[in-house]
Image: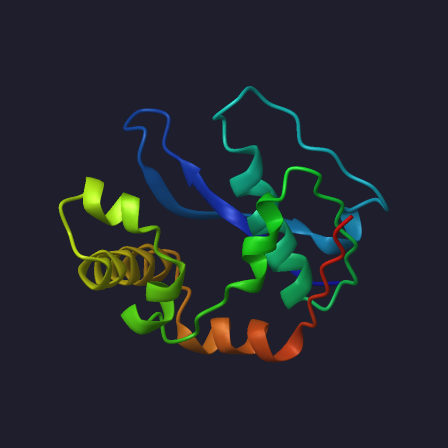
Length: 140
């Protein structure tokens, strides 16, 4: 069974992420799961990481998402190019940041590229996820 990388351990003294990864064996998963926490505590973020890890490991996954947060899993941009982000930029968000849509998209692309690189996730891993996983969304 594959190990699922769900994050990094935090050093309690410095409150900084250490180099020690947090992994769980996919064989430890049951057939159902729930993530519980307060608003803003990172439930969706943890869920997305866990789902992406399961999909990357080839674990069949059925997701029920009444809030609609998980449709963003379909937005995988292997090269993390600004042009990939631009169609999805909210013009109001760009204006609030004092940027054009193109500049805001470029800033988001850099933010994502640097953030993912900090976890050792590069274009090849994103390309594999995009190539290997079929996403289907059903709406009411």
